[in-house]
Length: 363
Image 1 (cartoon, one colour):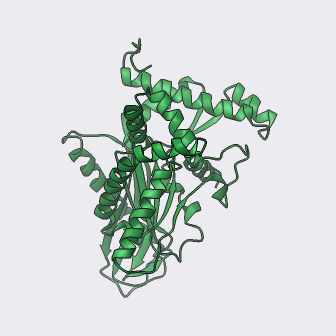
Image 2 (cartoon, rainbow, N blue to C red):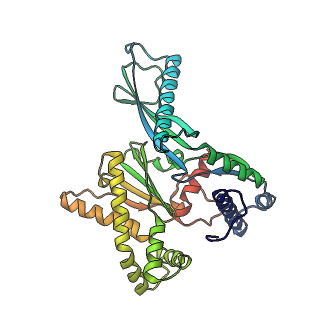
Image 3 (cartoon, helix red, strand yellow):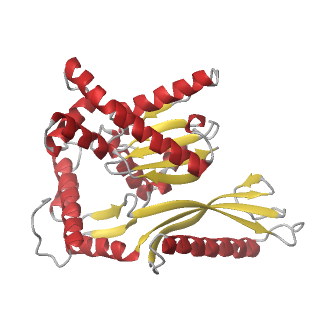
């Protein structure tokens, strides 16, 4: 597929169509192989009568946490439902304008039409105190955290068109940041949390504090970097390198082979961590060792990912002579306390985002 010619009028459209077709084929195959999936559901899949919820990776879909402040004139009066709606509408309008301006700057000052898949207030403070809503409170300074998720409108329309051409019912686009409440349950009293989704070409991270999402960031490095270095060092094709990397992640190789691959990956792991920690500090204004860390995603099972974080955090703890040790955990589907995999066939951290997204729809 890499070098074949396409008859489609647009090369990228054809690539996108093939990618969607491949994902649907793999999902259908997994369902049919699972004895836990009902015959009724299998028949619906076979007839194409299925609903599709889409989650787009960075940079196809971008999520941002925007802080907006509002100063009330009549701050001694309690906030009515009408005032709350008016304030909320104003800060959401401001956020739209801010994000649209940012998107324009990053597209070389060209007007860019955005498809807003999420724009909602996720936390509120009045005079520094966290409140569930503004209704019934007095106070002067109001601070909002707003989750905004957007993508290129033409790109989104193209995906919808392709899904429709396959005869599928499109339910909408969900960003991973919208689903993280399932992982934050029970962690509200913990210190700072950092969720890391290690994909193929990118790594997205989500910072949270006291049960609330605080920031979203990404780097353009993921598991593919490890595949490429393995392919180059061992002089094997990329497909063989992917297979070898997966066996290494699942501890299916001999001890001698594991040691050899570990040496190959050491420098790549350090480079990945360095880029990630710099970006985390840029976004959150905090060093990465302040966070408890939870890892998932397609490359999240790669031992080097967890190992390099643990090593760097351990070195930092020794430098600062602290007895506090951060949690560094890889999240597997079985660890999702409130989400059940009815197929009982998903065992890799790769499937955690998909389970989070699907459970969000059910909620």
